Length: 80
Image (tube, rainbow, N blue to C red; front, side, top):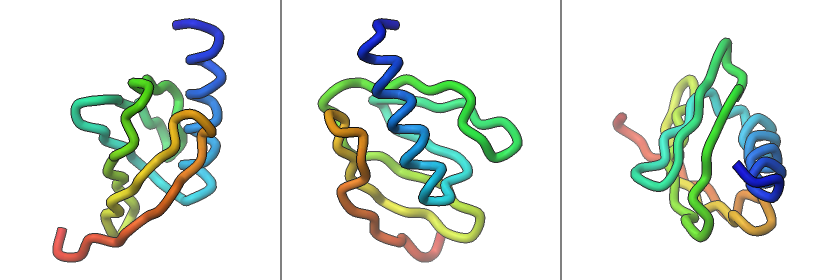
């Protein structure tokens, strides 16, 4: 992994943890390893902004800015 990718992954992890996200599933563009509710390792495909985050009581459909490492928007998805 390049230094730039590692820095991006740290920004991604920090933003997700700030949102209280427990588990992350990007399909097919990225993945994350979560241990005890903390993101330990992740990989992000540049330019991919859509991901789904599993929170303790709800699912969120999100758009993520992979350049700035920030969450653009989230939408709660009910019934899951």
